Image (cartoon, rainbow, N blue to C red; front, top):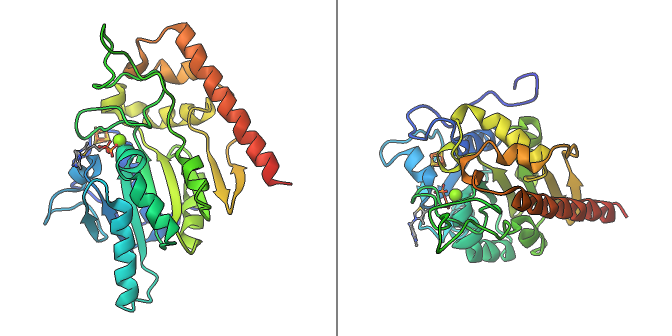
Length: 298
Ligand SMILES: Cc1ncc(C[n+]2csc(CCOP(=O)(O)OP(=O)(O)O)c2C)c(N)n1
Ligand code: SF4
Ligand SMILES: [Mg+2]
């Protein structure tokens, strides 16, 4: 453990094939630092499968099972059930690790089922805001204003005009015991939340901001700054919901979304008017979050 309380152990090692500055690996590194060696990870088709390597090669120091795109939560549920049937009492943590497409789109039904059945798993969505592995197609978590290969800028089609689906709200509607948003630019907050997920008996959900310099079109070395701007502008608020109670863990929403958007090529086409609309939407969602937190205290 270093002085900031971050475990120094590493379970994601060299030999991976992520692009420089990829957030997905950083997210998994922090998750595994907290959960430790006694963890099994299952992951669907996504950038991470390309990153971690193909059998027998891997950059992982814990067991890893690849599953079909739509089945991550079902796969994790199956692993957890198998551990129980085998009588394993060594507190093995089962982690479902999927992208935004595999979580918010094709894998949503399996999440709903696993939560309903109360499986003891930690589901981590690394949200890089598009289907990156197959060439940057939009997902329901692609933010307002972004251009992708399925939202090209042109005569026939345009950039994404709808906001991100609110995955946290969907999970909370299932009466989840613990759900939290995390951002590797805030590692202490990140680690504390994974500690809580680890201590939760039942399904817990971690929604992780995950930079993608390749798909978002910015210089890889700006990753941590990008993360800080995402949270300081309110584009990616940090909060947790514990047994229905909301707690915003970073309250300094001090910057305009323009500061975040202007650094990324995927937003370069946007007019001032459109960015103002994005800002209005972010402000409205932030007010809703504050109200939810206030109601939680009553
Ligand atoms: C049933 C099915 N449909 C489509 C695919 C193709 N596919 C593989 S990875 C991927 C994109 C995954 O996107 P996301 O979950 O956001 O992860 P990322 O690649 O961004 O890390 C797609 C569409 C597939 N493997 N299986
Ligand atoms: S395309 Fe994006 S998510 Fe995929 S490995 Fe590269 S940086 Fe990471
Ligand atoms: Mg993605």
